[in-house]
Amino acid sequence: MTVEIRFRWLLVLISLATVFFLRDSRVLLTGYVVIITIGLLVWAFILPRWTVARERRLHAEILRLLGHNEGHAALALLESQWLLRRLGRHAVLMEAYGLAHTSLNDHDAAYDALVTALKSATPSHRPRIEMNIAQAEIALGNREAAIERYQRLIRTYPDLQIARSALEKLDH
Image (tube, rainbow, N blue to C red; front, side):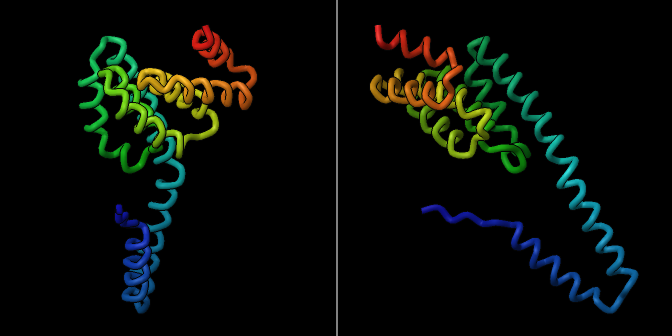
């Protein structure tokens, strides 16, 4: 059983307490509201762009490392990304973990990471993650599950040629 603490609710409580204590001072209350408003604007507009740019750079670097068979370096790079783990899209990082574990032939960990990535993936990332899951299933010896996954991908995304060719290779 995992207990997860959502610090956002704690911040709301602290914010309400701060407003309560500043209620008698218009200047301090106005300053507080301005600071909170600026923080929310940064959170809503600047931070998402920054995290997407960082995720793209990270993804490119991970692929470069994996292209040079440096799976351990890729995992170390992923572990050092504490800010992206907290603010970035979870699916992007978990997919990268899955790819790094695949390059190290740790297919159980790769499969687990990719399935976790699939749970929070955007629709545009789902086919790629599902293709990687199918490859992990093949590596784990679960050929039938991979075939079912490829067939489901083809039904969902009829123009996905890579899934068709992967399925044809499995059928032969």
